[in-house]
Structure formats: structure tokens, C-alpha cells
Image (tube, rainbow, N blue to C red; front, side, top):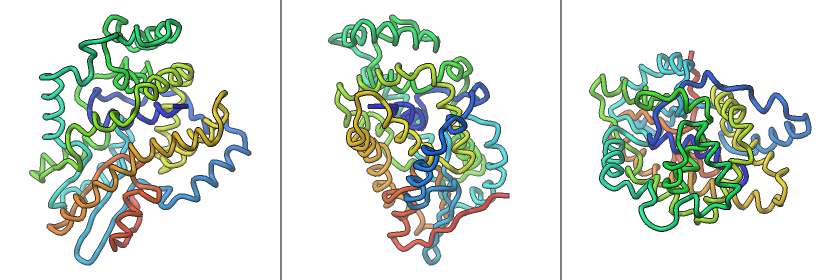
Length: 334
């Protein structure tokens, strides 16, 4: 799948499979180098999507209030100012909803500890045996750059390798401590104030997501990611800068526009693959979250924090809440 595996990093980090890292080693945004013609196409594609810009919102239906923070799952010093501005809304909430709360994180880690077969190949051909020799050589080098020796990498399941490749080498080198990002900072703030924090979805959702992709599709993700390894830092920079500009949807559309130029792919193939990725990673999850959000809102003010890509689109959280009768308003932070 062309270029799409870079987008998986945000979701992999959501499920806290990796420790957090600072965004300081990033290079520069790809948008800076994009020709005007492609910039125009990108802007048009972004403008066609409901709620395409902005990270912070309020959804109100009668007495029900949901404050929504679209998040970026990597640590970044710029989160501090946003958290300070969001703190009053967190503290007034009766419930805080996140993609993976403390109980979900604990359950996921416990499951992997008890049954490592979720991420490790325990029988059958290793990854080295599944991949063409030249692809394995490139993969072993890429993972070595991330501090993962080849003998370990060969035993990882392909989907887990895709997630690891999505984190650039410079970030992997800095990883330490527990995951934070804005999500983790919201959880810490709520926990310190004794406000209940609940997950929006079951703890094992990450496994169910990747079960919807065939082995061939996942291997294709590995190969396309390796082909773009020299752009890893720039792609990560683009994602970070897009988020803090409130333009996460634009970065999604940028990935699509750039994928059209990949050799061997037609526009129709690219659009079909993006449609599947959107459905599996975003739309289906969004629809499952709506009953959780609305049920919590009936009990009192809610603060919800989840990846910013879930906000926009026809099946975005904001549009789905609007269809439920909520008035959607942007929340401007000082």
C-alpha cells in the first residue's frame, strides 16, 4: 500500500505499543517542497472534507456537552500550552474518554506478556523467510538503524514491523519512559483530579484492525515503507507540523496526492487503498465510538481526547455527532 504505513504510526502509538519520544529530531515539512500545482490540488481536496481544520471543538445538544481534543500521539513540547488551556475543560468533566485508557493499556500489556504470539511469530516461516532476500536485507538495515537486531526482527509479525518502521530512526533512538503525547497528558491530568478515564474501544482493537488486512497487503506496506526510508524524518516532520497547524486532514490528503506519482499505481488503485485504510483505521472506529460518547454525555460533561484524524470527514466524529443533533463549534485556545 503506497505510503500509507507512515499514517499507521499514530494508531500504533495510540495503543501504546511503543514508548514516547520527542519530536525534536524531525527534519522539515514536505509541504515546503511541494510545487504550486500540487499544493492547489491538495488544498482543494482538503476543503472538500467536512471539518477539515482545527484540533479542538465543543459538541452541545441541550444540556449535553462534549469537549473534544484532537491529539497527536508523540511527545512534543508544544503540547504543554494546549494542555494548560484545556485543563479547565478536563477538570469540569464528569468523564474523560480516550482511545486507550489506563485499564485498556494495562489489559493490552498483560495480554502480550501472557501471549506474545500477538506480535511474535511462534511457528511457521520467519519474516526473513517470507520476504524476498533483497527486501529482507533492506528491512534488517532499517530496523538495525532503530536499534533492533535482525535476529529479533525476523520473529516479529509483519504488522508489528510496519508499526516499528513508521517511527523514524532518530525518534526510536530517543524513546524512553512511558507513552505520553497529548493523550497521556490528558489522562494524567484527569487521574490526578480523580476524574474517571475510560477507553472508547476494547483494549484489543489494534489486533482486530490489522486482521482486516491480508498478509500480502501488510508485506506491501513493508516494501513501500522501505522504498521511502530516506524520507522518514521529513514525513514525520510533516505530520507534526500539520497537527500543530490544525491541518492533520491536509497531511492525509498530501499522502494521497504524493501516492499518485508512485510507479506502478493508478489513481484508482491509490483511491481504493486509501478508502480501505480510512474505513478500517478511522470510519469504522468512529461509528463505534459515537454511542460511547453520547451515553457518557447524558451523565454529565465529557472531555474526549483522540487522534486528530478522527475529527474530519463524512464519517468523522464531528460530522457524526452533528447527525446526532449536536451543535458543533470550534474551541479556540488562548
